[in-house]
Image (cartoon, rainbow, N blue to C red; front, top):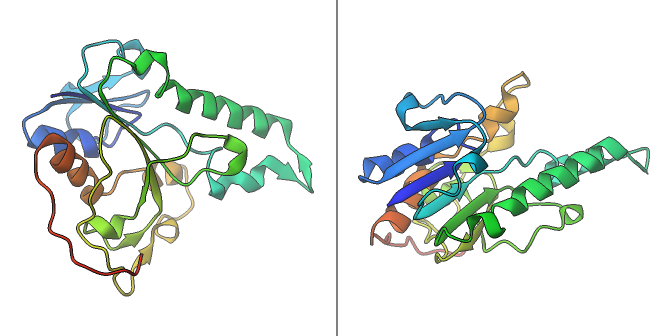
Length: 208
């Protein structure tokens, strides 16, 4: 398959698909940090979105769309206009990945944290956690899927003593970028389940 991974500088998902023999490329305004610039399209992903892609995995900027950022929309109970403008711009960018510009791509995954109600995003298809795919962290991750079934978790029982991802990254200029990186287990699951016929054996449980 030809796979475009939009808004990804880490190349985590790109490299997972490459490992399985797919022609995958990451795309982002920033240079890549994954070590393979030859597989990175630096610039606006919508400049190359009209190419012949079989699948797209997109990670649109979530700063103003998530529950974690909703508090910045108000100050002392009053709307902050510039924050609402930024939120609407973020929503419009997110929706482009589900709009006419991507109608030619048969398989689409969009990943974002749980959105707040003001963002007015369409309902997500699935909500997953890194610990479901082998990474001992808690970080609710929503998937919007088109032309694909939900991911099948490898584990259904929540492990003891998992780490909360939001506590693992100290304040600093790269905090947002580092926190947005895709966990290896989820990247590998995307590649394995959507790039092959592999389905994991489930560890039964109910503590989701």
